[in-house]
Image (cartoon, rainbow, N blue to C red; front, side, top):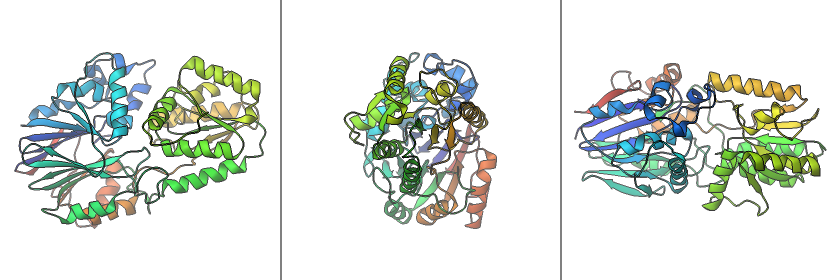
Length: 448
């Protein structure tokens, strides 16, 4: 059976992930993501109203024209999890393919919301829910399997396409978490089985984000303990405390809500994306929040809540807000600019339970946001976080478990690939032979 891979997006930068695998006459697309930083550098861009071609020209979504070179029919579009760099282009591109979108329940719900917000294209692809551990036939000869992984968003999987020539494991994005705060641990037992059954693993496509960092990525339970330490350390402060984290990081939001109550403050979630992700997770029973937890996304509702906090006393509340990357229209950025009824006073605490995504736009915006907050007298508690991506030893463990015949580094630019290439070469792989360093829009022929 002929096997080839189209590396469509995410092979020249972090963001706009998209990869297609052809096995015989069957094609499976993994991820259709958005590069948000390409949007944020423009003022007041509303992607919902934009044409896909304009977003492709902007470098915001994958240029999928290379798909015309694949001689087969697309049988499934498979996003690995609900982050925008993996699902953000589905509403712009999926309608071009007569194929269902197959994902875990939480991811499907986020995809559904993306499609409902789309104002340019009608996306009528079937939405198919599949749980980790389940399989689906792809054509007559192939099978799709979801393997549970842990990441900085719930309900994440690594999809595996089983072919007569061996398994194709699409490894974006994960960390090796054996004690997660929400959900099941990463299923390393299944990865080891896949590496040793049938024809083994023909190809492993891997996210290289932290390949240059030594050691292993800590568990989310480590971040939870760090956050608890910080929150308890400011328990006696009688002024304002504000926290921010990734809206999609439900486990971290859950920890913030619990520790706010521990220190005698009423938590409240503020910002559109904060309301969207946490509300969806609660509705689908992935997390249980207190009955009186307020979630407000609309600007007027947020400002009314800020006024109530100022009237009833900042010392009684913990606003958990959007804006950890300094996004221009996010809540924390507006607070730093003095554009909300919430007044920061000298000594007030701002807790960043997130790291800056290492990209120039984010770094610049985050720097500006912190400066604005500091100018109002805020004390910054930074970097209370663990990554959602594998460090070097995690990558080594995955290679040891899967023992793939071929490797394709992904989710980075060329400089970001270098550490992973070195690790793979130390394990006996060779660039140009079984280690395939690709670019956006290229094809890799694995089996002719």
